[in-house]
Image (cartoon, rainbow, N blue to C red; front, side, top):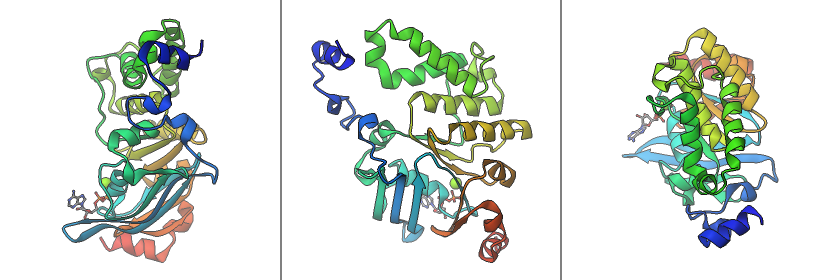
Length: 278
Ligand code: ADP
Ligand code: MG
């Protein structure tokens, strides 16, 4: 019997439309046929008449690692709020893959469809071990199959162990998360996101407050995630962005000022003026 047949028999779940989130199962539905995972077109967001985003256009390729820079107030965080459904745009289009219209989904539906977001302040369970944190992150999404199939547990343990290794916490599995360093806590939260198997990861200032060594390791982690995942990284740390090596988008006053590799962007007169002007 297949997993789906068992689910149907025991829980009366007919198909993957009925996953309790009111939205189609992501793995089967994300259409990457044009190789674009995220597409924003003419997105405008106003707060009391002030345009935090002003006809913003952005396209992220499947597997891409994109950095977003721009002075404070440029609209970087607001852009992430729109992608994750926290803020509704006044106008414009936002698509995940070819077919999923993000402006029609709620925040939980968007998370479930495969977009994970890391906030600046990590939301980990301090009294639980690193291992347990990843286990808890997995449970919220996979609770049905977890309680159903005891045999899956080995597989899940292996996945948790592999993720701990990936985020550099292979030797800290049993450590209470509250005792980890600032950088390790950030990696743990990224690990928790990974347990949900997101196709797109949004990371807002991920290396803020990290040591140089932790920053280098975070760059290595992101480079290892790119390809399988798509990443959109907002950062101010230029040495970190240089290590990531991908395309850089400069936001200014709610729009894209320019895009290109870091060296090109840094030598652009308009970009220099925008930064010096503050
Ligand atoms: P960034 O992350 O690039 O520093 P933000 O997206 O946080 O910029 O903010 C863009 C602009 O929108 C800022 O001028 C900010 O004050 C304003 N803004 C952001 N969120 C709100 C809000 N909820 N209400 C009013 N103004 C906001
Ligand atoms: Mg911000």
